[in-house]
Length: 295
Image (cartoon, rainbow, N blue to C red; front, top):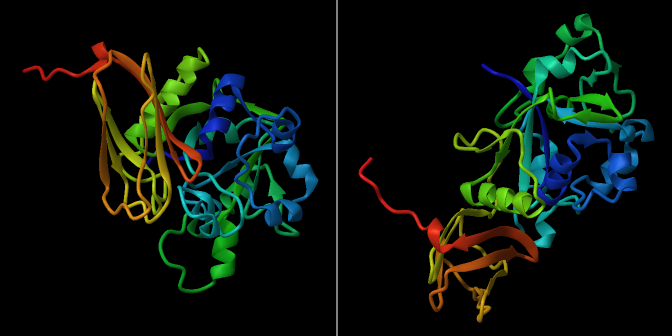
C-alpha cells in the first residue's frame, strides 16, 4: 500500500499553493493574504501554540476529524465549528521524502492539545500509535485518544516546496477537477503534477452536497449533483457574446440533475454557486463537444 502525507485546502487556497510552488505556514499565508478561505476552527486555532503556525502542516491521513467538520456545501448552521471548506483540493506528498528531510518533525496527535510531543527521530517514528492514527469507522471505545491520534501531523518549518515532495493533486469529482484546471489556466499556470479525481472515494468524506459532473454543449448545460440540494440555494451564471443567461433553482428543488437551455453559441463561460460559494467554473468552446468514435 502506498502511503502519503495529506494537505487539504479550499480551491482558492489550492490555486495559491500551486502558484507559489510551495505549501506555506499558516502565519506566512495570512501575512501575504493568501489564505482566502480559512477552514481552521477559530476555537482550535486559539488553543494552538503560535510556534506551530510558522510550520507547513501535513496530516498522516485524509479522512481527518478536522475535514469532517468543514468539507462540502452545507447550510451555515451545519458547519459545527464555524469554518468551512466547501470545494476541497487534496495535495498528496511523498511520505518518505518529507519525513527523511532533516527539517521534518512529527506529532503523535493534535497540535492544539497541551503537552503534545514533537519528535523527529526514526526510533520515535516507529513508536507512533499507527493503529489509532489510521483508525477507521465508528469509535466504540477510547474515543478521546483515537480522535487525538487521528489528528497526528508532520510539520515542516516555514514552507514545504512542492517540487521534489508533491506526488499528485486530487479533486473530489470530475466537475471540480475541471474547475481547478480552468481556474489555473486563467492564471496561466500549468501544474507539473497530475490532477486526478478521487474515483475510489478514499480521500474525501463526501457526505455533503457538491457537483459531481457537468456537460457543456452549444445550447445546454447539464448538471449532476452528488445528492439533493436540500434547500441550499444554487445559482448558475453564464457569459456569452450577446447573452448572459442565469438560472436559480427553486428552494424546493428535489432532484439530483438539472439542465439549462439557451440559444446556441460557440463559446461561453459558466459559474455555479452553492450557498454563495463557488462550486463549478469552466469555459465552453464549440470544438470541445465530444464526438463518439468507434476507437
